[in-house]
Image 1: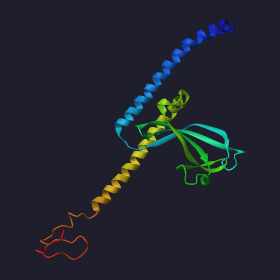
Image 2 (image 1 turned 180 degrees about the horizontal axis):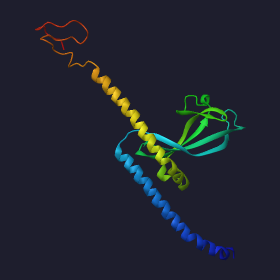
Image 3 (image 1 turned 90 degrees about the vertical axis):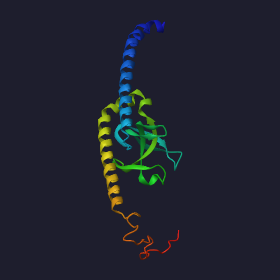
Image 4 (image 1 turned 90 degrees about the horizontal axis):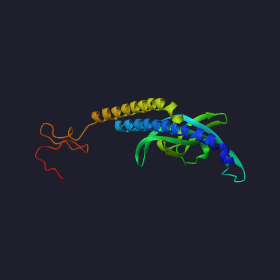
Length: 201
């Protein structure tokens, strides 16, 4: 009897569901195209943008299992690499006091919160294309900023590479320490070896 009553409403939902899924699939294809084009660039740098979402939960206190503590969680959009290659990711962090890590999870950055300075400790990573529709939709507002952050990371890396290359070009090499005017230079730092002197190898 209940089924008969709700059948008209189910019928109304059917075309909506089809349209929603088609629109969602089209958006996911756009995300995949962005991911593929980024991969083709071979930038080799990572960046984040966000947060996409924030939440507060009560978790068990590790020091006292009988009590609970407030845990702030943040979700970020990122471009990075896992064991399968480069991709768009969703990274989930928890905010914790700096002294609670004890050398465990890597510290990403310190944040000033209402409860004082806390740091982001990585909890988990998921590829954006396999995340929920809600998370994928939330990413739309952060893609442009992510690309800006990637560009900035690429510029920073470029400057670092140029600096290293410049320093390397100014360092003496073995070829410059070689034969000069008929003498062989001892690269150990001693005086030049006279011509005709056997060189021990």
